[in-house]
Image (cartoon, rainbow, N blue to C red):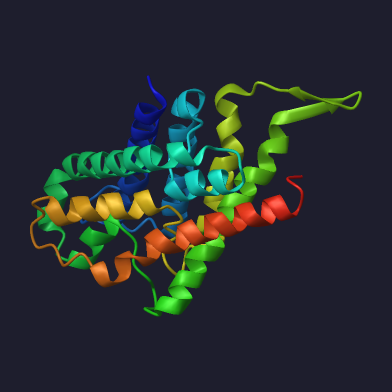
Length: 247
């Protein structure tokens, strides 16, 4: 498996489980209908764990254009590789959304609320205020990217003044998953915490193209926020990390 294929597969798995938990909670006659925000935030945390754990050894499991851009900004990833990673992530997110659509195929017709159908695929603000929505996404992604960079110390142990790598295997994905879970619980109420351009834009495109009965428009007027704001937040976090001496 190549790094680009790893990013495609990892992002696809992320969206299958992430959008899948939203579908389970929101769609009519689903077994999980109405189970609430805690289930959604927890499901996304598990989705991140699984996506990262599966492909980390192949591509380092960015699964997020904001992470790729942030790592490049911090000098930890080559800028030349960023475009390919982003394309793979977008395609993986689109494919994952198609799988969720197939998994819940009977439920689209019986769900009357078109906004809930779209919410399975992409985010929308609780209160539509573009400056505030943008700021919230910047803050959420800043926390994510800064945490990803800072927690690298969790994967090392120090003895006699030297760093000794500790191979945690799949367990190495747990801190990142818990961080995403925490962001959802604490900062997700304003915008639905996209914090990932691929997570929002790929499935939003799938919603636009798939034959979903009774669906609403794709809200392209808002769609730039969950794309641009995470990129800004990721870059700012990387800048802060570098300014603090890459501790």
